[in-house]
Length: 283
Image (cartoon, rainbow, N blue to C red; front, side, top):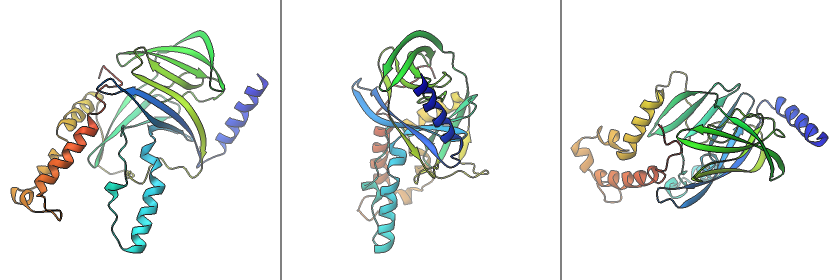
């Protein structure tokens, strides 16, 4: 008990005096894809001074590699094909929670635009008496109905953040494990790291300006409608801006612009529809 209390005090002290720092919590996510086969990815919850950001780890883990390639290209004068280097994340969305958490902001990229919606919190958890040790932490059980699924979470008061992966939050301690009752989504805390000089934007992100109309807020229903249409025809808006003559013009590799669009669109459709087993069944 004393050790846990001391840990909490030290944790809060370090957190309170780290203005540009964040604590990164690594969550392994096991989920069933559209073929109901298990896939695993690493996701992160970055908790800073006034907010947290949850996303696919690939969205930030490639920054140093990209920086290195950009610098090499600058020095050599040789253009680097970044498409051969950059891996696309399985999940491109971000969930931002501003403390104290009263709502979440769910955002995703649609081409160069970032579309987002706000959703009111808190979640209606039911804490039960069952406890068990998960990893190094004493955890307690809580259950929740959300998004058409029944969820079971295990949280620990040894890490004093009322937060967790995805949209989950509001328990008296960090969520260290959570899954739905069909085991189609399962998150487990696997590591913790202090991050100095933290920025919520990666190299591939474009930091939105206050008057940037590409950062659009809509209702959750409108977001779902627009994003579902995007998954079917992801490059439609771009193709619509080109004339027939432009689409028929040749590219350096011999393909027409229309053929290149078709090839790239197929890749994007595959990526966007590789995970049709939605976390939230009720949208």
